[in-house]
Amino acid sequence: METVTTFKWGIDLPIFIVVYLLVLIFIGYFSYRRRVGVTVKDFFTANRSLGYIVLGVALFATIASGNTFLGYSGNAYRTGLSFLVAPAFYLSILVGLFIMAAKIIPIASKRNYITPGDYFIDRYGSKALSIILILLMFWATFVQFFEQDIAIGYIGEVTSGGYIPYYIAAAIFLAVSLIIILTGGFRGSALTNFIMGIVMIIGLLGVVFVVLPILGGTKELATLASDPKMTSYLAPKGVVFLNGWLSNLILIMFGVLSYYQIWTFVIANKDFQSFRKQYIFSPLVYVLVPTFFVIIGIFGKALIPNLSGTDADKIVPLILNNAAQKSLSGYIMGEFMYLAVISATLSTAAAVMFSIGSILSKDLFARLANRTMEDKEVINISKIIMVVIGILGYIIVMTPKFTLWRWVELKFEIGLQAVPALVLGMYFAWVNKKGIWTGIISGLIVTLLLTFTGHAKVLGFHAGVIGVVINFVLALIVSYLTKQPEEIESASKIIS
Amino acid sequence: MKNDLIVFITVIIFLVLATPWYIPISVEPLLFGLPLWSIIVPIILLVLGYFVYFMMGKIKED
Image 1 (cartoon, rainbow over the protein chains, first blue to last red):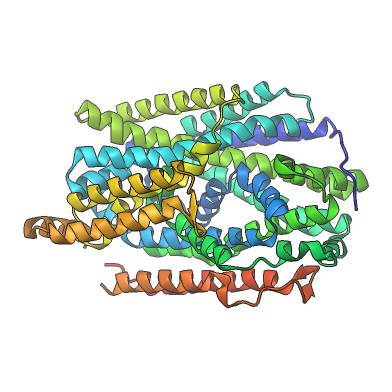
Image 2 (image 1 turned 45 degrees about the horizontal axis):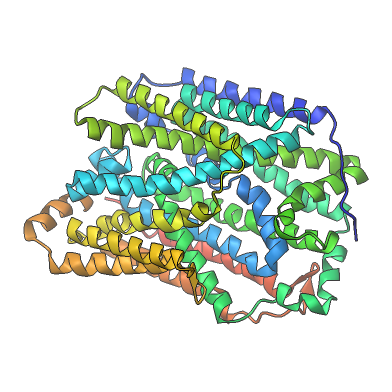
């Protein structure tokens, strides 16, 4: 059993990070040089020209955030093997993407959609409904951005070994993200995310196959099983455990569809079969990466058993510190893992800023302005929004007392209420705006009432999941009861 | 319509089998220092992931 140790990383770590960031900026600039004219389609989707390996790895890098790389092991440390739900809900993301991609890729290609607003307005013919749906999705996306901002300053300070203060590290990371997306557009964002995704996978493999064995490996892990107090930690049981597991699958499977960046990455595919090719390697990555984080957390419990509360979130840096003290290979792998953590945070922050800028400029600004804008004007407005979002993020980083947890809890649960409109509209021509309005309002009321009356979970089911089930059911019932032949005919032309 | 059915069946099978209600959950036996059930779960998930890939291949594009 190890004690908690402090360890000072050498100056080589910040140098290594600066070189890495410069390479990323170069790739963003290189993408800018490769662009085909200044068009919205190229800037927002790279003309659907990127291959499945780049898109698949980049999408993974976008989904796996700083929270995944620091928080998941911390959560496994606290809750035990019940957090094996993480690989299950990560895989459920792939199922959610399948539900969406099977329909939206051909529809978007046929109808020339670029943003979700294009689809909502075309499908439901209501500007008000389209704006509400975009705002619901904005909520989920923006809260995810908050999470990255808060992580980014902390990670910067830790990885620079204290050489670079928190506020400067955060400014550097946000500036790098902005340079990449402003100069490279979607192409730059996807290519740099691809590189970062590879670094993330290598860093994680290094921890599992180099760092953990240095610290005792499976022998150390087995010490937990010999402690009778650890039974419920290693073997969780009961209806609430299973309901909670299922609830997480549903929450993430549909919740992830409310992220703007997911839309962007899905419609950037040439066709559905090209999108499917990502699944040659995606299940492996989406299952193994979170599983490894759970193992790291459980290993941490065996190695350093007495961390409580939020201290458990420091388990990854603590394990790295211990390994770095013991051997050179532990030190090198530790550096790589820090690079992976930075990559996880930067890739998500860049993709989110890019998607918010591109979608809000087209779906909110252009629609509220109520006029057709030139491609160049849309791109310029999107760039301004990206910068504003970046600055806002920096202000949040500089305000660490800002309490977000309550809102973070509601991230998916509120964004989730936009998903029935997104999914049902693609699958059923008779689903109409009356049904969708009824579903959204009822789903939101139920979710908020349950959450704010202290029932964030009922028998293990999240308030948002209960809300979205009601949303789905009412949207279907009301649409069916109010269906009009002419509406069905016009919707059929769009979705079939 | 056939495509929609493929998606629906995939989602239901995934939700049923990705929840470990049918796996005996206990501390012993251990494998690589971890309870066996915690090794079985990711293996089943991997199989389910490639089941999704297989089902996606059944989708017909116009």
